[in-house]
Amino acid sequence: MSLLTESDLAQIEAKGITKSKIRDQLETFREGIAFIDLEKAAVVGDGISKFSTTEEQVLIDEFDKLKPELSLLKFVPASGAASRMFKALFNFLEAYDPTIEKLDDYLERTGDTALQLFAKRLSDFPFYKIIEGRIERKTRSAGALVHLFVKELLSEEALNYGFYPKGLLPFHSYQDHAATPFEEHLKEGSTYAKTGNKAKLHFTISEQHRALFEKEFESINKRVSQTTQTVFDVNYSYQKSSTDTIAVDLENELFRNSDGSLLFRPGGHGALIENLNEQDADIIFIKNIDNVVVPENAKVVTNSKKVLAGVLVQVQQKAFTYAKLLETQEVSNNQLEDIKAFLEEDLNVRFSDSYDSFMLDEQAKILQDKINRPIRVCGMVKNEGEPGGGPFWIKDGKNRISLQIIESAQMDTSNEYQRKLIAQATHFNPVDLVCGVRNFKGEKYNLLNFVDTKQGFITEKTKDGKELKALELPGLWNGAMAYWNTIFVEVPLLTFNPVKTVNDLLKPSHQIG
Image 1 (cartoon, one colour):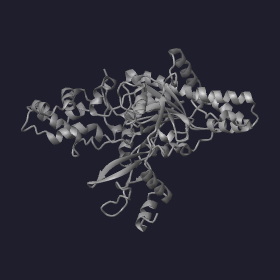
Image 2: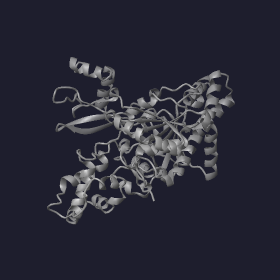
Image 3: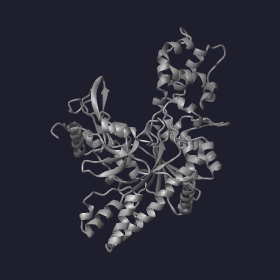
Image 4: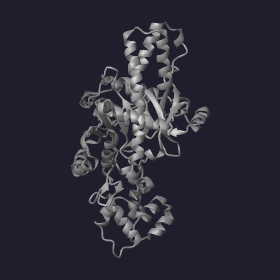
């Protein structure tokens, strides 16, 4: 670490980062990160389970029966800023002057179809009434009106929605109020993540937005609590400074800011494994902040979540029984075969060809290692062109096969065979997880022990006009959960309603009839 100065070491220590971690990150930059070796796409019948309506009801009933005895938590990554949602509108504000050009001429000149749709359906946005009450519409041209509307929406001296976290924007327009995703997550949590009359939710947010979230909760708590008959226990955490990663230049030398200090960058959503690791519940539901539904689709979402939770409690009961048996060290050959079959058939675990050549006590140790892991049951949606990581069987550097969620950035699209496997994918990951993080004794696993640190991402960025390389940690539902036991289940497309651009709010799934 001779490259580091005294002030560098003080900066690293202040962030809570160890020198060895910096050393490892620099080594990662030098070595690069290999593409994932896809073995085959996970499909229904081979990596993805699909249940009939009757089977789903059995799973729902199983979860509902056990729910009163379980501690439940809904974990919502919610630090995403809204600025990216409004990219097209920011561009419009910069490029359009209503005093010198008609809106129709601007649309024809630029071919801006996103702005065209936005302007055409202005009154269908959930923030329309809010802005309408703030601006004077009389005698204005269509262009001036739309320009003023967008300015009121985004400018710092007005609503400043571009600064807001996505979770606190109006998403759904009800008769008497506009609901944010934060509010919709509370309502949704009351339907499946409630024990007795109490629902516990944890939101990971940016520290600068905490006061805004607390203000929103204070504003809506009474109304939502009354309508759902639920007492909400809401808490927050931030992405830790110690999970930031060092940046380097294109020669893999330390990148420095103009004042000579080291440049650190946020480690991406994979850093949230640390936040998740600090939560403790029998079952943890994970879902992104922008994936919410209007009331008419709420039942579909609730039932889907209960199906996933039903799968988890069913498989957990068996896993706990077998884990307890393995700890006694008095396991017959037949029992070892039963446990192996359970791991293969129910938990999608794959064993090496050499497994059968091991002595029985060695096989028992292998089974014990495989069964004593956190379990995640992940909803998978049929691929209809939406972006998102996909479910694949992969092979690691030691030829071990496992079921994983792989992002497109991890795939070698220059390889013809890998491209063929990618084309065979039928489903994608909507970030819809139900997690069991305790062992058969009720002790919480240390989730940091189940991360594949080699599954990060190296990206190229710029700072102060200079190019640099940044390191993202293994994604929360990707490499950060690589060594969990994994089950994929097909869920309805209706359960996936992300809002990536402002115009996504115009989709039927976000319009209240």
